[in-house]
Amino acid sequence: MSYVKDISFYEVVRPLKVSFATSLGKRDIISSVIVKITLESGHSGLGECPTSLALKHEGIKQIKDVLTEASKKLTNKPIAECQKGLKMLRKIYKKCPMTVSGLEVALFRARLAFENKSEHSYWGGALNNIETDITIPFITDPKMLDRWVRYAKSVGFSIFKLKVSGNIEADKAYISGFYDKLKPLSDGFSVRLDGNQGFTERSFFQLIDFIEHKGYDIELFEQPLPKASYKGFTEIKKYSPIPIILDETVFSTKDLIRAIDKDMCHGVNIKIAKSGIDESIRIYYTAKAHGMKLMIGCMTETITGLSAGIYLALGTGGFDFIDLDAIHFLRHKKQYGDIVIDGPRYTFKTNNTTI
Image 1: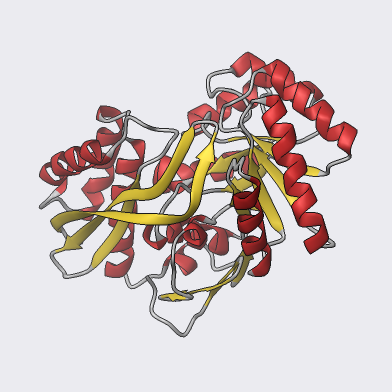
Image 2 (image 1 turned 180 degrees about the horizontal axis):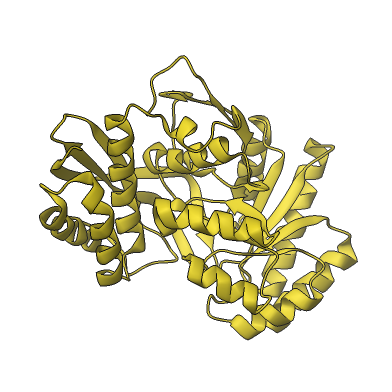
């Protein structure tokens, strides 16, 4: 078994093609930290520690501080012992879950490289391609909305996730504006909504009434209420005609079990960036065992972090909804290692070297 020789990291800043606006705020760039773990054997792995509107206290400085401390605790330790170290770090730095998750991905990839295994085969190798949705940020400028919708449609997207705000009148205009712009461009498309915790029970049902009145066919509604609104989720789940998918409420298996016990949702959005490798797969199997819908999502990440979710979705083949669109907000290549990007499709190519 190899030892951790070195942990290094550097900051990445990239401009977005369009402002990423949700009920939690707006951003025009992504900023994250790429972490690299190198083993004494020479094998290495990369992970990404993103920043997020949902976790505003986990900024670049905090990420770097945690990684500096993590380096002291994990360097010169056998790989087998590092998972215990990661669990300890997750307890100590509860406010920085994405940092520990990025570190865990780097360690996971270094171990796979040492064992000469690919992520695709590790997760089961079930699929060779998947199709993601694309996010339509909460854009109130009609010209900007039109430009982003036309771009998304022009590169082949047919599944759209609209970021709604909780401001009912603004949301009504935004959703109607989206449908008005897309319908002339497409005969068939699917729509999902993401509330990013912006709604109350009352405003949620107000928007549902509007949607039903308009006859809009909505596939799911992700995280409409604040993350700790346990009673609220139980209430809206009883009456919602649209499946409720939890995101920010569920970071761990313990969180999911609470949601199941309280009958709070129809499904869960798993993000490796928030839960890490081991906890994400535990959430996956727990949700499967309870017959829940499974979504796989991402933060605003580069391909370094996003690819971990792509491999999990491809390898398991078990997700109902794919929301791995972060790379489309950036200038990007069409191929990264063995992942080929063709519009909304990610294809695994077996004749290339893994990331």
